[in-house]
Image (cartoon, rainbow, N blue to C red; front, side, top):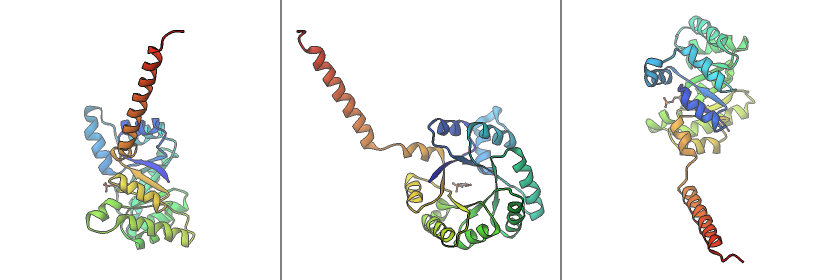
Length: 229
Ligand code: E4P
């Protein structure tokens, strides 16, 4: 499973890239807005942000459309895709979105279909030509449904019908979500930075490191105390 960062913050993306665990990035208008608020007076616009991300990460970078009609989506997607070869255009699933996905994918523009909450939506997006489909795990869990089950069903669906789209497990909220996404075969998990940080941690790792250090110092102290022969 590839690891994408689900953030628009450059500092978080740089840290994940330094760790060698950032195969791509997904942004959306809310993430951009949060990054702008975090940056304060040094805040940058969406185009500049995507280009700065592309300087850090060698992989797909999702930039999301904010228009609603098919014609507007096509024009906006062409503009976003022109910014950088790494740009993948995010389009929400609905009728106008599907028509845009069909036209744009025929032009060779890669689409990440977002806000997927059902297997039917995933099927339509993949049939229309989307390169990626993004089932939203956490938001489904929030309303009492099983988000990971949708990821698993979508992986099976694409595999069974030989559809080339890849599944991005999105709206992941915790380390259980990331482990489960890997277990059910998601091609990609897009992960918020705090969750990525937690993925490294285990109390037995901390305990093990401390025990190794203590034993090392104990051995060194004993060796230093040996009489010189
Ligand atoms: C990624 O493509 C999605 O936009 C993102 O994972 C949504 O996550 P949220 O439900 O936490 O906003």
